[in-house]
Image (cartoon, rainbow, N blue to C red; front, side):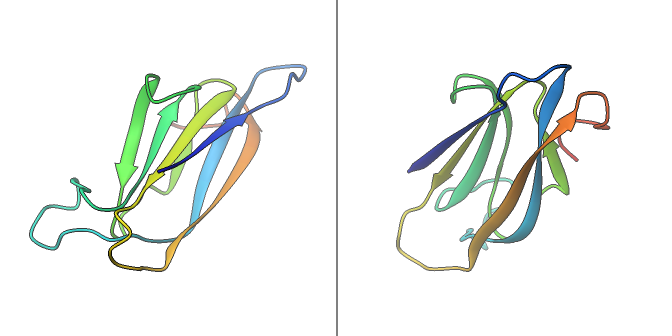
Length: 106
């Protein structure tokens, strides 16, 4: 498992983190719905750890258009069973002014 914690440095004003998916293809089980990701998954939490608010876990080629944090921390966890290789993922994380997001995940 690989973990990343993204944190906004202290800034004047209120900012949140915005995640965009540039490329995404992780292993999934064809027999299961894409909402279950037992083999490989990319999971997001709205805070400093996996005990923070769960934002979503994604596999296959299905992912949200964008994910927003509600504060200045975001945890990203990548789990793989290392049995099959797929393209992987490429995401961009940026800082945006709070209030510009429409919803946390869509």
